Structure formats: structure tokens, C-alpha cells
Amino acid sequence: MNSVSFSIPQSRPAGFSASIVVTLVSALLLFIGFVALPYSATQRAVEIPVTLTLQIMPVLLSLATALFALRAWRSPAYASVDLGLAFGIGVLVLAAYHIRTLSLDAGPTLGDSFSRTGLGFWVSLVGALGLIGQRWLPRPEVDLLAKRNAVGKTWQRVFSGANVVALIALVLIAITIINQAFGLVEMKYTIDPATLSDRPLEELTEAELVAIVQEAAPNKIRVIIRDTLSVVPNAQFTTLPINQVLAGRIYPTELGDLGINDLTTEQHLAILSDNLSQEQMLNVVTTQVVNAQVVKSWLLFDSIFNRTAIEEEVKAENPDAKLEFRSWISGGFISRSIASSATNAGLRTALLGSLWIISITILLAFPIGIGAAIYLEEYANTSSKAGDSFVTRAVSLFNRLIEINIRNLAGVPSIIYGMLGLTVFVKWAEPFFSGRVFGMTDTNGRTVLAAAFTMALLILPVIIINAQEAIRAVPSTIREASFGIGATKWQTIWRQVLPSSLPGIMTGMILSMSRAVGETAPLIVVGASTFIGIDPNGPFSKFTVIPIQIFQWTGRPELEFKNTAAAAIIVLLVLLVLLNGTAIIIRQRFSRRVQ
Image 1 (tube, rainbow, N blue to C red):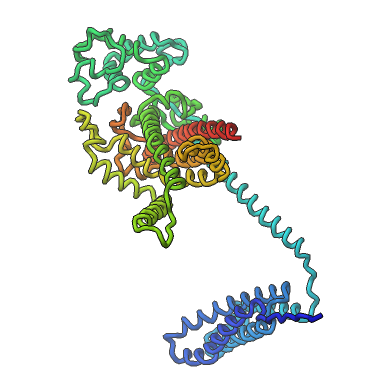
Image 2: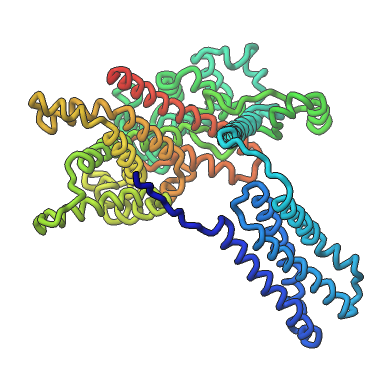
């Protein structure tokens, strides 16, 4: 029986090349130490850089030597001879530096020179001990399975720690926001609420609040109608008839052709009573009659732990003011429009703008994104063969370019989409996006519709990529079974592939919605207003959104606007949770149906 022998080629041990590099660097430094240093003693121009080089490089060299030596001791596959040579030359370089500092009579003693390079010296000593241990001491027996398990547990702890850090960061952010959204405030009133009624204003009925407005602020009734009910710009409030000023509101039909100045006080009050709820009338009384103003505010933690000191401070500085605990987020905050005072500021206009834009964005991006994903995954031919025709190869190349561009667009900064929307939707297609083709003349291209188209372009790549991955994850056996019973390609896609992939598609929808709700830069470029008091009532309206409103409030010098910004952040988070929660519920239902 013939025996077969195998020759195993002997390869250089791991770390050999690295040790050679370290050795060459050591030799270079040694040359500098014994040749360049004497020259630098007479040429002062190069003394400082050479000195700095020899201060830093030996330390780094010695540290690298020690690390190589420690690994050589742990794993015998590394070359100890070359590491020892590197260590020896590194020590010689250190010695050259010390000789150099003493020969120049520059003042430092041997102890001073060692103090400047002491780290390199001691690290080199550790490297020498490591080499000795690798050479003569017994190496520890390593259980490879236990070692792998230990490494796995180490990485598990690292990942768990990352989750803990992320959770702590989220908790700190939430605490910071809540700390600013609640707290004590020092209030000052034009008319004390206690003088208007023997009961709290919150307990009064709508009719009682209207009577307070009539008695305490009869000259402000038209201003209240303008700010709460008018749907036209303020400049046209007194010139247009009631049927245009109060379009969509409740008013006597016979008053439709009259102007607002032609009505009596009783008719003004009747319009207010018919259109405003008790909560809205309470807001009117608070802002227009009582005119509550926040003099100073405190954070929640200060309000809890330092309440006594705050009460004494308010009593000493302003005895007539009232100290109240205030929640900056409330029903009135959500229902009020923007105001120049933080006390009366509201989020209604920005909230409606966000809802309009996100609704149109979803209606645009969702079907287009899914359709594009279906085409790219089920119909597009991205590969060509040698015998294919020129048209087939061209179509294949075109499909590949589309897919590459979509994946690249997912990483484009959002402000670039804003510039695209400004150029295409606001300027080039201004007649359509301003509504001029539909007979509207009081708007320009900076409308809700232009913003929604811009946001749809922004989130389309995310939707397409996630939908592609979800469709690709559907097992091919489902398609083959559908074809086997005679279904067409479209029937297979519509009845089998899409229902199976919809949970993954909804995941992409959640991610894209979250990004669209919080975007600010593209909307600023497109033309979102930072201060607007007219609510958007259609796709061709001017707009603002919650993130821009938060940005505007945080830039105000009054500290109270930081509190309103914190309240707006909470509203934005709640809106985001509601939208994502709805999408998650839909995803879970389809997941159960597929299972």
C-alpha cells in the first residue's frame, strides 16, 4: 500500500511584517538620534522639530513594541526575535535622546529628560518583560471554546450597554422637556379674574363668558371675531361682506351682504355665541379681557423643591402678582393660534399645517413608492446576456441606473430636496401649485401642496427601498404555487405577494412618516412661514408646521417661549406616536392575516 505524504508550506509567523516595519522605523529614529542631532546642535533652525520628533516617536514606538510583545506572549504564533530587536533599537533611541539633551548643556538634567520620556521608558520595560515571558515562561493553556464564549459575552455586554446608554439619553431628553413644560409662573392681570365672577372662569357657561366680554371689553368684539372666526386676510376683514369673511361659519342669512361694521353689538355677540364653544370663549376672555401675562416662570424641579424660596421672592419683588402652577400644554394651547406673547401663544395653525402636509404626502408617496418597488422587483430586468438585443441591454442598464439612483437618493441631505422643491414646484410650476389654474389669485407657489410634493420626494427612496426588501423576502414558492394553479403575474402580485409583504412595507412607511413629520430644512426653503395667524384650509394655503414653530419659539429672547417650545415638542411627539401607532396596528393586522 503506497503512502501519500503531504508537504505543508512553512509560512512566516503572524506579526512578522508588522515587526519588520517597527524595526525599520526604529532604525530611522536611531539614525536621526546619532546623525541628525549633532548636526542640529549647530543648526538651531531644525533643533525644535527634531527634538519634538524624538520626544513623541519613541513613546509611540515603545507602546507599539509593548503591545506586540504582550500579544506574542498570549499567542506563540508571533515572532519574538523581531519584536526583541525592535525593542532594543527603541531603547537605543531613548538613550540617544537623553545623551542629546545632556550634551547641549541646555539645562535639563538626566531626571528631567526621563520625566519627559518616562512613559516611553516604562512602556519599553513592560515590553521587555513581555518578551522575556514569551521566550522562557510557560504559556497559559487557552480553551478556545471558552475563549469564544467569553468574547461573545463581552460583545453582548457592549451591545446591552449601548441600549442602556440610548435609553438613558431618551429618559434625559424626556425629563428635560417635561421640566420645561410645567412649573410655577408669576402671573399679572389687566383685570383680576376674581372681579369678573364669584366662580372660577373655567366653571362659567358659554353665555356667561359672552356676557363678560360684552361688559368688560365691548370695543374688542370685532377684533375677537377677526382673530377667531375670519377666514380672510386682516386687511380685507372690514371691506368684504359677511358671507366671505365668515365663510363656513354660522350667521343669519340676511346679514350675508353686510359688512362687519354694519352689525350691531348684539349681532356680533350672537355670532360669537353661535360659533365658539365654552373652551374657546374661555380662551377669548383670558386673552382679550383678563390679559394674563407671565412675568417670570420656573422649571418643574425648581417649583417642586424650591417652592418656599420662590414664594418669598415673588412676595418681595411683586406683592400684587399671583404665583400659579401652570401646565404650558393644555387644550387652550392646542386650540389657540400663534400670538406675540408666550402666555397667549397657541399651536393650532402649525398643527393643522403639519396634518395637511403629512396627509397629502402619504397619499402621494405611498402608492408611488409601492408601485416603483413592484416594478423594480417583479418586472424590471436588471441583467443582460451576451445574446440579448441592443434594446434589451439598454432597458437592463436603465433599470440598474434607476435602482442605483434610488439608493443614492436615500442619503441625500434633506435641504437638497428643499432646493429641488423651490426650483420645480414653487417657481417652474407656480401656476399649478399656487392654484392660479383653478382660479385662485391670492396665493403664490409657497403652499401646502408644494411642501407636500417636496416631502413626498424626500421619503420616496425610503419607501421604495423598504418595499423592495419586503417583496424580495416573500418566498418564491408562493409565486410558484400561484402560477401553478393558473394565476397571472398580476394576480400573483396582487393576491399573494403584496399581502405577504405588507408588514415590511408598513415598516418603511413608519420610518418615512417619522422623518417627514420632523423635517424642517426643506420646508423652510420651500417657503414655510415662521409667523402666520391664518389657519390652512386647503392645499393652496400658506402654512407653517410644528417643527418650524418650535424653531421660531426657541429663537425668541423671552424665556417663557422656551416653555411653549417644550409643550409643542410634547404635542409633536404625541402626534408622531399616534401616526406610528396607527401604522403599527395596520401592520399587525396584516401580519396575523398572513399567518
